[in-house]
Image (cartoon, rainbow, N blue to C red; front, side, top):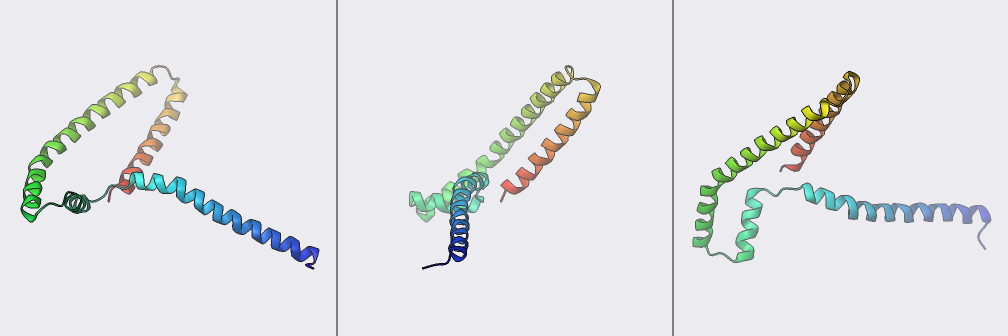
Length: 129
């Protein structure tokens, strides 16, 4: 028969181990998905997967590469336009909100915006390959 002190110690160790295993599972299930959402595969990874899944011939692969290269500047231009429109709308929103705030609140709002921009900047750096 196990002594009560030893039994209690074993129970605590078992509870700790089960908690660690459960925490690891939940963490990977929840945070693992978030991390994969932020992962943007490199162009070459996407290209290789595309070629493999569609079972492209070498000639088709070269032709697809050519099409992708030809359209890349168009997508870059669209992204730039989107960014400019987004920033203009965001600035308009911020300006309108400022009209409702007191001088002290505007200072707090400045800090809040700075924090948000820093967080956004970190997210962009981490999200890109």
